Image 1 (cartoon, one colour):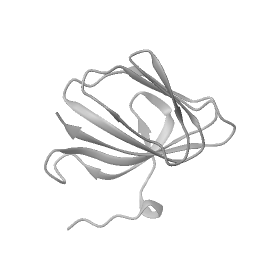
Image 2: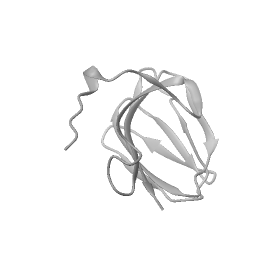
Image 3: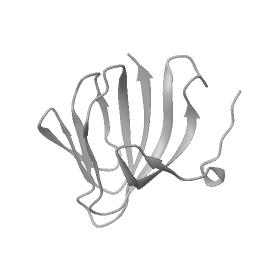
Image 4: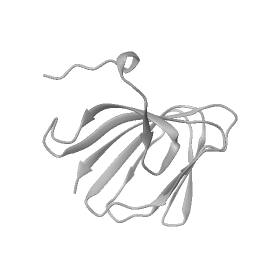
Length: 111
């Protein structure tokens, strides 16, 4: 068993933009196939630049705020309650184009 509480976790930098902060609840090797389980906080205007993962798929769930995710050049709206899965190799970029923090809970799984 592993028990974590967001309020007790330290903030870390998101690798695709060090200004964006995250709290990691589960890490690589905590569970089979799981690479990470985290919550990220994008301030208005912040961008996780375009990138892809060949060895991982990612699932994002919008907790609060709004923004867009671009996947292979196609733009999708992010609003509370939205869940979107990104397949290995898909180039994706996340932008907070709203006026409040965009809060994403997400996890990565080995492909």
